[in-house]
Image (cartoon, rainbow, N blue to C red; front, side, top):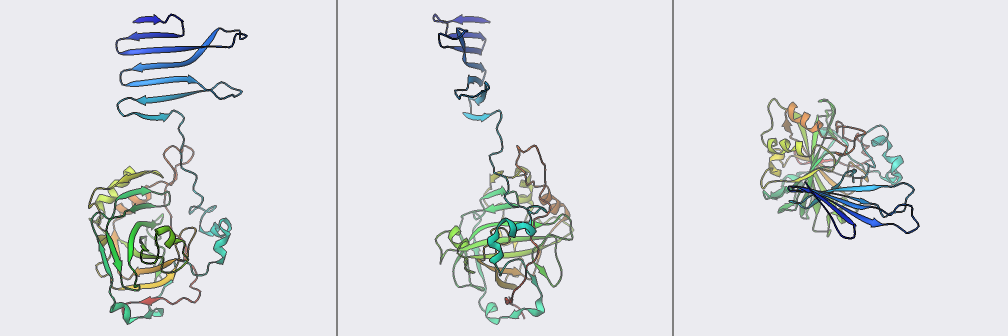
Length: 354
């Protein structure tokens, strides 16, 4: 170990091999009882540097901030780093859940055409034009690009090629994102209830009208029922894993906490594989988003046929957390994230099949 001091005694270096400690001293005011104090300390140990410096803020207490820097990656984080994600303004709990949304967001009181709803096949109006105007649903394998934990669900988003039209609409729609809703057990979870049956989960594929609107945000806030078209796929339990979802669901371990987000490899999931085989048989009605601000801007397409997930895959969904990684106060899982059904209020539900 060697020690070296500069001529003006303002710095002190202590080294041993590749490790070095450098102490820089700063002169205090002449009337101060002490002649000097530490302004900063730099410790170099191999690939790491630790720098301790005196805060320049005028506070009643002395405080220091510590920065660790990994030279190889030029990455900085503070030792007291806190979750930078703001608290969830709403959720599905008793205090901030669906029964409280109207109190939290009073503008919801004026909305009359909300989703989800109950659907009874015999009470729906058959529209033969829907069958003669079949969907065109084209997407490429680069359509799904990111996977994120939003704190309310997982969400897959992307801006790859998609061309979605016809069915109950004339305009052209583009894929925006998809997510799921599920329950704490296998007897609840879907948002729409068809012929009195509630299934354990429901998938929503969200698309936006790029013919009438310039951006997804403009379409979403338009309060016009042509702004978004959301495809709802109800999900039942099957004995074995759904092979089309295995690769995606295995990535949930990388987005366990709220705010975590990863990029998806090319072709890891196909939107068409998430839909029933017969997509031309469906119910359709005008409604809203099922999460605040519950904008009434959605043309809903609820498929008659369903897809399946295994019990294991449903439990993978329930392992996602609504808290961020640095939140040590709670450790809450997303176990129940569906909205109760809303009144129909005179709306007509159409079906494409006899």
